[in-house]
Amino acid sequence: MIALAHHPTFSVLFPFSQSQPHGHCSSRKLLAPRKDQLYKSVSKPRVIMALASNEEGGIRVGERLYLGMDFGTSGARYALIDKQGTIHSEGKREYPVLMSDEKMDWVRSWRAALFSLLEDIPIHLRPLVASISIDGTSATTLIVDSNTGEPLWRPFLYNESCPDALPTVKSVAPANHTVCSGSSTLCKLVSWWNIEGSNKKSALLLHQADWLLWLLHGKLGVSDYNNALKVGYDPASDSYPSWLRSQPYSQLLPSVIAPGTSIGNLKEEIRTQFGFQEDCIVCAGTTDSIAAFLAARAAQPGKAVTSLGSTLAIKLLSTTRIDDARFGVYSHRLDDKWLVGGASNTGGAVLKQFFTDEQLQKLSEQINPMEASPLDYYPLKAVGERFPVADPNLVPRLHPRPESDVEYLHGILESIAHIEAKAYNLLKDLGATQVEEVLTAGGGAKNEKWTKIRERVLGLPVSRAKQTEAAYGAALLALKGAPHDS
Image (cartoon, rainbow, N blue to C red):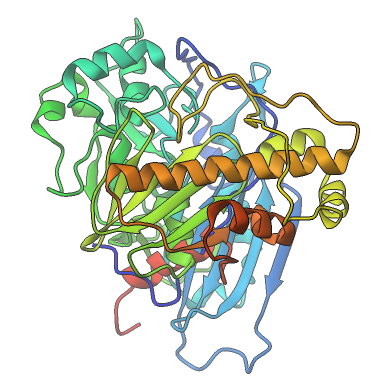
């Protein structure tokens, strides 16, 4: 089980502009990169930020450090912490723009970012790393060769919908199950399975975090029960349900362990290349929103975390499990409690369509957050919503646009707050523990005027989480999985 972290972090990054397919979930074959590219740093992406924060007396003799890496929607971060949760180094990388057939080659880009982050860790700190864990975007799915681990098809991204597979999935899964959504991992698996000519015999399903961790430990076919939730894994019984095991594609499903569990030692090639110790282990990961929750220190039922990044994701700690695909609601296990919530397609990516970071800051300063905006929008970057309304055909509503940019921004921010409020009210109506306090993570947590707007709309205390990077939550999982005497 995941222990509620003592020093529990989070961020969601803004994505590249890209259209996501709706309707049929198409899959295009992906040529595997050459073996000699596996451990090679591919054309270094620009370093956005690298920090070694070691000023307070340095590191004690015998101190070990714990590495967490977060793979968000547009970039990756790392955080290196000690047992007390103090950050000794952190950094960020944008995903390099690597193209294949005129489309973004996400697999090569993620791989490049992973090894670039390892290079960014200060050389003198690498021998101190005792364990590593990674979080990735939920339901980002790869179908790989079960012998080589190399992708057989392009990845299915987190918000990609596969409605072609939905009737098949609904015919076998319980009513309103988490997998009964076009963007679920299981729908993506079934969509691939139904493609003529797909290589079913030597295929294996992995999630983004699973595959990145495999690059480090080399043991194919291992996942965690947070990432495996949307493929149908039952976290209450710690097993795949019988209705799923009886399907012909069940042979592709990975084995599942608890997040933070040690999988094995870091591969010798990587230890040698980057200077890690022989006893450095790799631990099972989690999803980015779970990592966010762990980092935000929301340890009591009724505490919630809203992640305002490229999208809006909420997680509420509840004593009751709620799963209802009609509304995009699902629950992750966390010890003897449940993290109930969902992810909306609204969020910072919409703001980025209209305003620069500088404009957002300057315009926000002119907003009176105690005054309600008369504008009623449903801000989406593209057609389709996941939660609190599960409607792949929901059309963005961002008009009429007033002449004043301040009024327009105010209207968008307030409309997103109303979607957030609707989400928390929905969870209450479905039987979850009532929310009492909201902590905020992601880039939107920095906007104080938005926080005040949300407080007014939600009618709840809202504050910024002390830790705002998912990489920190992943580092806490690495700490959990490390030997206790390290």
